[in-house]
Image (cartoon, rainbow, N blue to C red):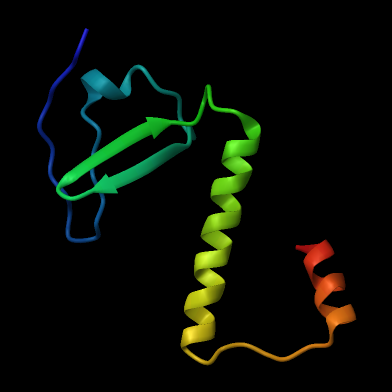
Length: 89
């Protein structure tokens, strides 16, 4: 059954999931947000493959690192040091 409700975004970018829909999820549950044009899809990660969640985390870290690079917030390290840092990451 499809459930439909209306909500709005706050000035801080927060969107409240109406209680009628929220009752189907647990506190602390993680979601994937996918945007295409004016459509946003919110999907629970509960039944997703563990590797998919790790891939998403890697993609987020890569995007954050690229943004820091674009702002000039990076440092040069040797190949060996980079591999050592990568292992810690």
